[in-house]
Amino acid sequence: MTTHLDRLLFAQGGQCFFCLKPLPKAEASVEHLVASANGGTNDDGNCVACCKALNHLLGSKSIKEKMQIVLNQRGNFQCPSSACAQPAPPPSPAPAATAPKAALQSTNGNPSAIDLVLADLKKRGASRPRKVATLTSTIKALLKQHQKPNTDAEIVSLIAELQKRGKVIVTDTKVSYRLG
Image 1 (cartoon, one colour):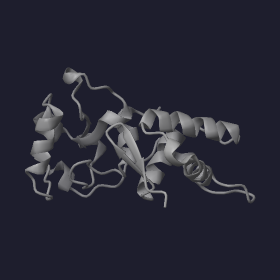
Image 2 (cartoon, one colour):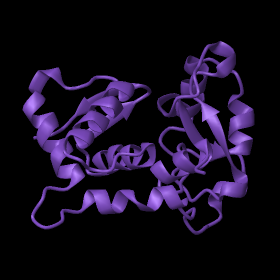
Image 3 (cartoon, one colour):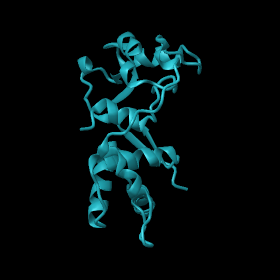
């Protein structure tokens, strides 16, 4: 079973959200951008993987206080722990996370899941989903309509691939697009 931390590390390419350095799973923890103590949810849109030391430092500070800590680094963010500085192999994906790669590739001339999603988002124009939860359910419905696999891990993988390609920008729980 894929854990919340596993999903976040997978979506982040095995890197710390803040310093972008390799983050071993043993040193990783889930940071709530809006702290649970301040009403933040456990949704992937509110959570990131970072080192345990940074998670402890940020604690239940407000999002404003957390942003100030990040901004104080002036573009050269250094985690307070040496855990992020150590090169580590990327986390091994859970069995459920290996299937999405197939959904990204076309087969027998049929469009791949990623191609279907991109075409649908372009077609929607100004009525594209603006929240991660809405985008997730939209993709799930689209793939179901086209009889494509659509587990939660595959949807997360598709959104991560859209982000990697620069087509989707996710900020907190909001989504914007660069479909060109």
